[in-house]
Every structure is written in C-alpha cells, then in structure tokens.
Image (tube, rainbow, N blue to C red; front, side, top):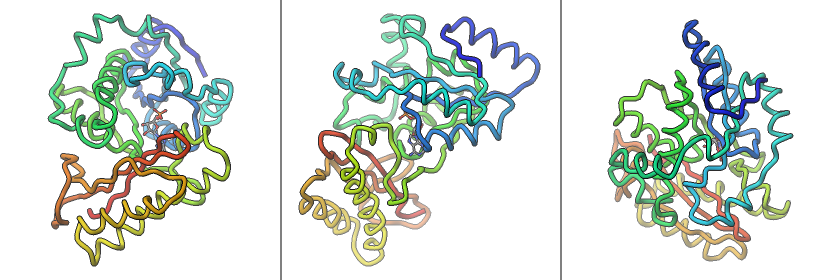
Amino acid sequence: MNIVKHKSEIVDLLQELKSKGKTIGFVPTMGALHRGHYELFRQAKKENDFLICSIFINPTQFSDAVEIDNYPKTLDQDIALLNKVKCDFLFIPEQKDLYSEQNIIEKSDLIDLNGLDLTLEGEVRPDHFKGVVFIVKTFFDIINADRAYFGKKDFQQLVIIKHMVNELNLNVQVIGCETVRNENGLALSSRNAKLAEEEIIEASFIYMVLKECKQKLKSLTVEASSSWVLDQFKNHASLTCEYFKIVDSRTLQPVTSLHENKSVVGCIAVKINNVRLIDNLVLSD
Ligand code: AMP
C-alpha cells in the first residue's frame, strides 16, 4: 500500500491511473478503523481497479476541539487492516495542505441542503453537515473517484452526500453500504472504543428497541410507536435517548403514518457514559 501525505502527490498518482482508464473507488474515513469500514473497503476493492482510503479527522464537522482531541487514533492498526484488504493508497493529509480558511468560506455555502442538514443530527450539532459537505467535496475534487462508499449507519450523511453530488452534478457514484453490527446487534463505530465491555453489551439495547419498534408499527400508529421507543429509554439506567424520529428516507422529515411507496427510517441518537451513538433502521420500504 502506498501511503501518501501530500495532495499534489495523490493528484498526480491518481491522474496517471485515470489516464490509463483505471477505475478508482474511494472510502473517506476518520480512522480508528473497524469491521464496518472494512466492508466498505472490500466492496470498493471488488468494484474498482484501485482502492483509496483517506484518514482525516475533519475539524470542520466538530463544534468542540476537545471532541477532536478525544477522537480515537489507531494509525498502526488502521494500516494493518488496510493492508489486509489490499488497499492501494492511504491518503493521510494534513489540514493545511487540504484547505485554507478562505476555502471554507467559499465552499461551505456551496449548495442549498434543503433543510436536510437541520433535522436529526443537525438539531443537536449545528453546522456539522456543512462541515461534512465541505470536506467530502474537498476530497472529491482531489481524488476524482469513480465511486465513493459511505455507510448507511450514518444515514443522514449518506442522504446529504447524495444530494450534494446531484446538485453539483458531480461525476462520482455514491454507494451506500449496509451497517455492520456486532453479534448483539450494536452498530460498529469508532466511538465504541470509548466504551467499557459492559457498556458495549448495554448499548445493544438500541438495536433491540429499533427492531421491536418495527414490529410495533404493524399494530400501532407512528406516534404511539415513537412514544414506545422513548419510554424504553426513560426506564433505562445508563442509556439516554437524545432523539428518536421516524422519517421519510428521502426528505428526512418526520412522517405521521406509513404510506405505501414511501421508504421510512427510524433514526436514533443515544448517549451512554457521555459517548454519543447513532443508529437507524428501515421501518418500511
Ligand atoms: P467514520 O470514520 O466514522 O467517518 O466513517 C467512515 C465511513 O464508514 C462512513 O461512511 C461511515 O458511515 C462508515 N461506517 C462507520 N461505521 C460503520 C458500520 N458499522 N457499518 C457500515 N459503515 C460504517
């Protein structure tokens, strides 16, 4: 695997491959890689001639510098995992080589996100998705990939990136990959590394409740099912539910009933010992 730190170097390497007609699959990450990321790499590797992974803890999507400092960093293990999946390029840029403050001003209001960024995570993390869109567009400009892979675990992020690509008419196919879970159903996340073993077990309650909510919706209204979910957490000693919303999977706006031909997703954020976990489940296709 070729480890590249400079933007100009990766641009040259990838341009050469593209000029030879090779396809490039890109997986952007913030590192602390796990089996969830691995599945993205595997799919990208299978569907493209070359796989490039980036590791960059993006300051523009955090509101708090402490959060950035606390984000888990495991570069040696990450490199081992990337070697295992035969990744071709690892791009680990420094912030100053990627963008300037001026770039942020120019690019962060690049497109209208149609309110997709204001609901769910956007309500608790203002400007988070503007930061995500900014950095993903910055990487897309550098890498010029044929396909880019994102996890459905970050469902809102995936919807917003697809929206950006559509709005800007970018020549990259955005592919959503299924959420990878542990044996108890907990969605794998780099943040799980901050949890103790017992907390990991407790956190699998989130997926249990999401699955049960899908069952409830067969006999209860959307409102009653949502209240049922919130009640489950009210009674839980260590898990605090920040939000649970049943939304239209295209607009991310709350729905009041399940209609045919409308894909509906239950999105949840839960705190355990100050670690924020998000998850979602398709409740109706
Ligand atoms: P992150 O490093 O957390 O920014 O994640 C990088 C990419 O991996 C994002 O597209 C995530 O949605 C995806 N990802 C993270 N965890 C999982 C998971 N458990 N299953 C599938 N994709 C995931």
